Amino acid sequence: MDPGQFLRASRVVIVAGKGGVGKTTVSAALARMAARQGLSALVVQVEPTSGLAALFGRPPLTYVESMLAPAAGTVGEVRGRTITPDDALLEYLEDHGLRRISKRLVSTGAMDVVATAAPGIKDILILGKVKALERSGAADLIVIDAPAAGHAVTFLLSVRGLLDAVRVGPINAQAREVLELLTDPERCTVVLVTLPEETPVNEVVETAFALEDRVGVSLGPVVVNGVYPMLQGLETPPAEAAAAAEVSLRPGDEVALTAAAGFRRQRQALQQGQLERLAELLPIPQLRLPFLFAASLEPDHVDVLAGALLEEVGALSDPAVRTEEPST
Image (cartoon, rainbow, N blue to C red; front, side):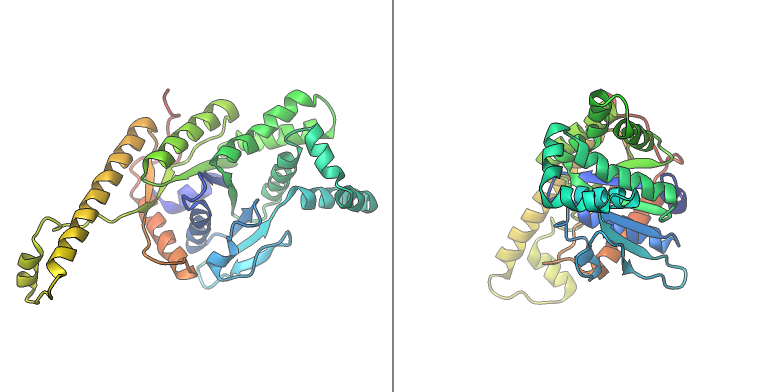
């Protein structure tokens, strides 16, 4: 598949997954991948502590849009921002000439009271701002670093809940417009992220069905993060491999190398089993990203993952970006 076609299929990509699977890293890599295709990308985090900006070597994001990676030659720019309910409400009220009221709402904690009385109102404020960004053409691709998987479902379901609770007025109109965005595959797609491990695979499958059945969003390929590269020759005895390479082993090396090879074979077998189980339970394409052996991720690592994403997308055989819905 042409990566450009993949990236232009939806103007908004919501990246969701269980906490700890690398959802934020995948969001950064996806934005960087778009930039390498000459597109402008805007990454939006809805949890201020996600650490997205650090992956680009930049200070923490705020509600004010900032540059994460400037354009260079044929490479597009990557910008970022945080969207919180309070900031979104402040902007909305100030744009409608209600600046004094907006400050009082936040300073007195009235926003929390409203959120308790109308569950989902905070989520709709965030999604409403995302909708406004999409409509304004803020970037060629808008990547949303969504909440962790469990909250991601309620985050997206909040729209339907508000439509049921509020039948008329501006909140109803906002919810309807947001729902139109979420359910239009040309405007919005959800990309789920997982690890090749049992619990994350179970959760990503459950999340996929919940999003399809209860929200009605379009699912893109599932990103499997942290996949160990398959190494060959692990069955070869260390002494034999050393002799073939014309090197000498020190005392204890053979025992350590045999143990390491055994661990790696076991790890590869376990992850392969989970990849096959995921394909069986969730019949949509997989984009597999390599495990990076680094204590902390730097901008160069994001570029490595962006390159891996490009290769994986290019290898997709189905010319259509979206695939069949998960079968129950």
